[in-house]
Image 1 (cartoon, rainbow, N blue to C red):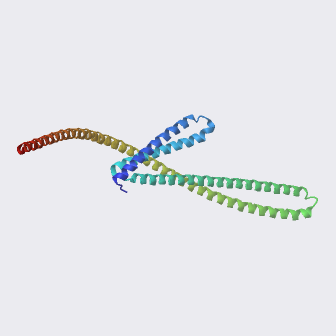
Image 2 (cartoon, helix red, strand yellow; image 1 turned 180 degrees about the horizontal axis):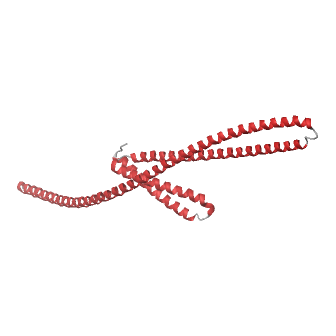
Image 3 (cartoon, rainbow, N blue to C red; image 1 turned 180 degrees about the vertical axis):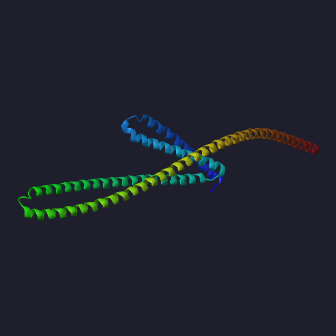
Amino acid sequence: MSLSRIQSLRLTAALEDCSDQLDILGHSLTVQISRERDTAAAQEKARLTKLRRDCQYISQQVFKLHLELEEKQSFSSLQQAVEEAGQKKKAENMRREAKRELAQRKQTVQRQQEEHQRKTEKLKDMYWLAKDLKHQLNEESSKIAAKKKIVEKNTKLQLQQKQKETSQTEKLLDDQLELLQKQLKEETRVHEKSKTFLQNQHKELQQQLQQWQQRTKQMLQEKEQQLNSVRCKRTVNLDRLAEMRRKFREMEQVVMEDREEQEKLCQQQAEARAATKV
């Protein structure tokens, strides 16, 4: 969006004041950070450091906007900076969300593995309990032979049923564990892909930053040359103005002298006419 020259000048003045305020704030934050030496104040120091980086970033954007307003009377760089900040924040949120979901799924897998371990231990206890019961039944076989056959048969059926249930449970748990491992592997792949993407984005942003710094340095040199040229022209114009003022004063003096001569001539003519009448 293009602005008029007046609007650009007003915004430029406001940005200069804003830049001064940011410099003061940045210096104040630096002093506060240097005073935070206690270990308990590490969180506050980190917050102040982040705030100082934000001030530096905003100051850079204000400087770019100041240059753009002077050169093009527009503020497209501000819109671009806002869009880039939004994209960066979105990428950071996506990375944080992916990390959080991965941690939750790892915890879920760990809980399920622990549950599987507990069930396995329980099944082992049940197996040894059944074995112990069988041993006790064998010891009592001489006393209760008839009852032994019935109990032994029932115990064998129960053991077979338990073993069958145990086998089915183990297979189900193994299948679930395999599925979870596949999901974990997929989540790890997605995480690595996201990490690679963010690293590439960071590299591109670093390259863009270097290019911006080079362009800014070049623009500063060009502005310095333009400023020197304007200073030279201003000096020449001031010399011309002084010369014109001097000539104007000389012309004004000539006019005044001519006016006085005219007045004297008129007076002499009046005196001559008066003498003629007498």
